[in-house]
Length: 113
Image 1: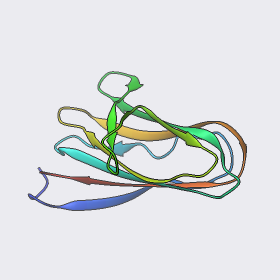
Image 2: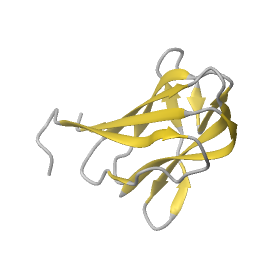
Image 3: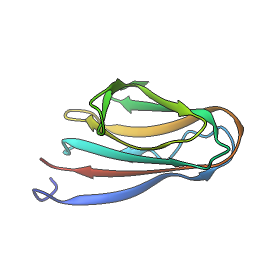
């Protein structure tokens, strides 16, 4: 069990320039994952937020800046932070799809409330 308030940063997609599944982060025993998505000005693609209990499924989170509920992040430029409740889940990932041009970096932090 992680120590309370313990945070670990995981690079999900390091300058992804093609479709990629991202790093599968073990989140069992954690409460939240906070994700920062930073895309190049030329980025054109979609980040799909997914979690696993017994197979990968879409997970809904919240865009921190305006509390919008999301399951994906997309756009020609992205620089946003998202928060996901991962209580009871096994793994989390940010999968890149629909990428045509540009690079994106996705960094995740998992923590106990």
